[in-house]
Image (cartoon, rainbow, N blue to C red; front, side, top):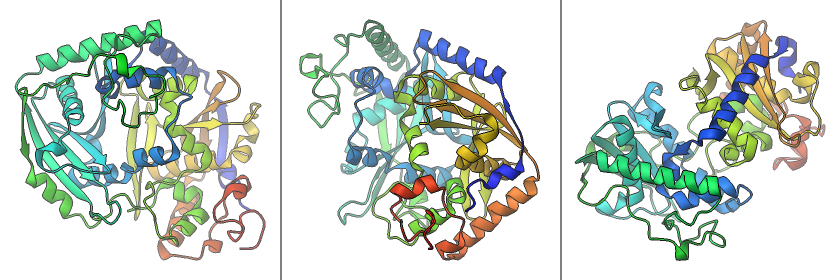
Length: 443
């Protein structure tokens, strides 16, 4: 079985102490000044418990609902803008945020299981978040897109709005007030000064401990009368013309992970999708979704992505029907990965012990036109242990040919047994075992 495809193309693996120290410094800096996000400010009491009670996680059903809009964001972002303007990180007075699309004005995308009619689709929390992004960028105008997912036979719906704010100063003042309240609560570990969450008594994950029943009611960041709202039929029409508009939550292209686990990708496309997120990660990579919630892992994630403004970027890569992004740190393709091994792996064994990480990095480098990349490897069970490895590759034309060949087989609908098997460790919990053949059983 081909469990270490990339190993023969690795020229060298070097531990990069400079980048490791840089990230460590960024982690310490974050601990001192606590980066509050726009999302935190929408419901600061809920944010307090996200920070302080990372062990409380959403139910699997709720987690799936939270992820169900991923495909929509990717599809709509490509439909109305370009990579240059999608998912723009902004920072303002100790507050950070990621604007879904920011070209001339901020554009906020929201997905929901039910969409109210008319102007009510622009829920107050949506307006609050867009208003804060406008305040951070100095824009008096913004656009809001609300997508109601297909559910129980009900067709998907979309509403788009243009918003104009009369003044940004009151919005900034409320942002600063909430920022300071949340900082104080985090420093003292006491949430008593924080307002009631809007999810109070509506299925909140922290309901048993939040104390919302005794908290002051939550007021809006953007008060009525501070903005005007109009439908945006032009923006709605852009979406309606897209060929996949009826099912934006389903896969519309192949992804880099499909090259790493092509046999699994082939089996998945033999199934009829049932309201699943658009990107299927292996079990280890899937844990990255909640990195921002969990101790050092969260700090490491934030240090890499936000520690040095502008150092981390998502660069688009495309190969025929494959469309994805490669994360780069200071121009170098960089993966952040989590290991659950209970001892550190010697660097010469890494491509074999963690072949899927290095295969992924090899394909990223090949498609992005680089001959070296970087792996930031966090050992989950070893306290604060993480390593930064620079990985040099050779014969990148052969790596590209392998990526092209795997994609060609997937595009042609080839039988899964014609594709490289997944690593054997995935076999035990694979939904396609035993007939997939990846565990040594003939396919």
